[in-house]
Amino acid sequence: MLRILTPHDPDYETRLSALVARGTSLPHDIETRVAEIVARVRLEGDRALREFTERFEHRQLAAIELQRSDWMEQAGRTSVPVRRALANAAVRIRSYHQLEKPSAYQLNEPGVRLRCRVTPLERVGLYIPGGTACLASTVLMTAIPAKVAGVRQIIMTTPGPSPETLAAALEAGVDRVFLVGGAQAIAALAYGTETVPRVDKIAGPGNAYVTAAKRLVYGDVGIDMIAGPTEVVIAADASAKPSWVAADLLAQAEHDVLSVPILVAVGRAVAEAVAAEVDRQLATLPRREIASKAVDNQGAAFVVEDTAAAIALVNRLAPEHVGLALANAAALANQVTAAGAVFVGEHACEAVGDYFAGPSHVLPTGGSARYASPLGVADFTKRTSFIEYDADALARQGDDIVALAEVEGLAGHGRSVSIRTSGKR
Image (cartoon, rainbow, N blue to C red; front, side):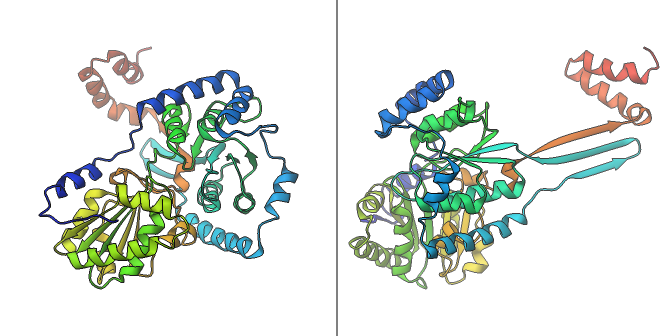
């Protein structure tokens, strides 16, 4: 049941504050176990990958890499409608991300030339879960921005690729596929093994063990973000169709038992109507056991007085997904300042963003939308600064540079300038 909370309830602010402070922290025991896994893979390479795959997944890892012929054969089992949908989605995702390609720039002054060069990363690793759901869409949403950026080699690790996932990898331009999952896959990508090449950056979602591993290897390798459980906050008023809002909440809840489905309702009547629909629709949802646990444990309906309060509450929560099921959604959309993605109006359901609209569905979670952004082309590039000075330019600025060096007590810095401007050698 979706619990309804009004501002008069004694635990309204307590529950809300807990959500605001949710973060992406992980249990200490998971971090400890992951540290051991990463250390073993770093030391023993393929041997550790095989051992952990057998221990955690109960499968023999005879071949770590999926051969291209097997890849093509398995991908060919994908139905024609799904192949067509993947191709159409890829076109939209590629078109959107082409617009966000970062460009070089420069600033010229007398005797000074400053410029920034943007180059793609050499090799990127994508982690694609292979658990309770086939995430073919995630392949498109991670690989295509990397491809648009110009990454020279894209490799994918997944513990159990479906034909659809492999078809998506072909569509998106993935170069190699490795049949490894969990924290051990992240370690292999970060440090390399006899079979798995070391990458420059790791992107893609995963469970708590994958997330802990990404946090641990960060610094030795780049990562896209530290992601927590997926979440949605839908702001709805009396103009919204309760059945549509409930369907959107359950679409998020069915991902995982830790998913966070939140309703911000303008008026208690809206909250009650949506809660009733959630109960009704849960009865026929194929993944109802997962969704019901998410609704019972993390779900809530916060009642507010008006749309201004609804938007303020949305910004306070800073969620991954925001749905605006409001009469004047388009006019209010720009007031949402902390969200991974904003779905504006009753027809922009979250599923269009998950699969087809264009922007990547890899989004900041756990309140990190306060400062973080969706996955994009820039995540797969690096910037390099170039600084050129002639003698006159250094002479004009030298006194200021020396003064700043002296303030910091770094005389050697100042000397490196004055030795050039004083005429002494």
